[in-house]
Amino acid sequence: MNGFGFGLGVAVRARTGVAGVPGTLGEFMWSGAQGTMFWVDPKEELAVVFLANTPGPVRRHYRELVKWLVEQAVND
Image (cartoon, rainbow, N blue to C red; front, side):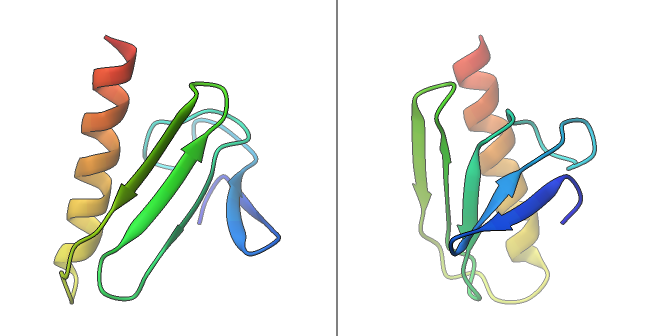
């Protein structure tokens, strides 16, 4: 994952501008095999849990869509 490193069982954003989805330095996340994901953004005081059963390539689309929509709502 571009822009992310790893720490204690989660992916941690280490660089901005290369991940393909919005976020801040220090946010951390993890995703499951069937489309579930969570992320925590300490700077924005935001925690999101997304539960979906979306196997196959479409799961990435929905993960990114949810991330974009939540980030836009927070930043507006």
